[in-house]
Image (cartoon, rainbow, N blue to C red):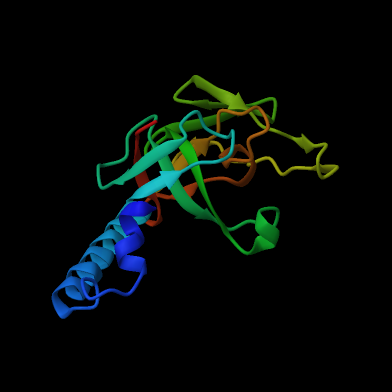
Length: 169
């Protein structure tokens, strides 16, 4: 705080035009850096995935990527849409199969069991009902948490409306 004292108290030093200009340029640079960082960094605060800090990237989607998108579902944020990040486990052209109505497989690899009932809201959850080839521009995502509300409940995401992420932490 002592370092800022000369800028906080009006003096002949900090009231001249040159010092004011440097101060506002510095303030602008700090503000621009803050905006850039907050728009390119994705901080995940739920236990749904293993990563906490991600960076948005333009890299093509691949298996295991963390994908951020707006989830529009009646059971998520009262249907108003909410930004979520999940793990991409099945891509366009892959074959999705469901056994016993709740066990999901992608190309015969088990990807998880659907979370069917939430004791938190005392309500049964929908289970996605689709078997076959995943359409172009669609992806299937899951969370790592056993109570993850994900594609097993609401279906595909649209890849060109999603953002890819790289793990930082």
